[in-house]
Length: 85
Image (tube, rainbow, N blue to C red; front, side, top):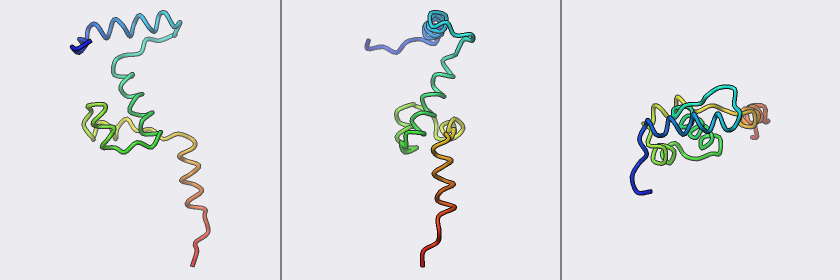
């Protein structure tokens, strides 16, 4: 497909996918984008790469970035690591 899908068509696809998947709630185009950005961030991709791939402004990318347990454990381990002379 060479042309972008319209917002209304994508909305219908998302609704259909949620229904076919038996999900209790319907996810939106926005939630799909936010989830994609979050997964890219949690995978360690650079913010600049995420903005280029997603088309989101860097401020929006920062809003969507959610940490996972592994990232929090790593941060904790770096804080708890002994200071070497």
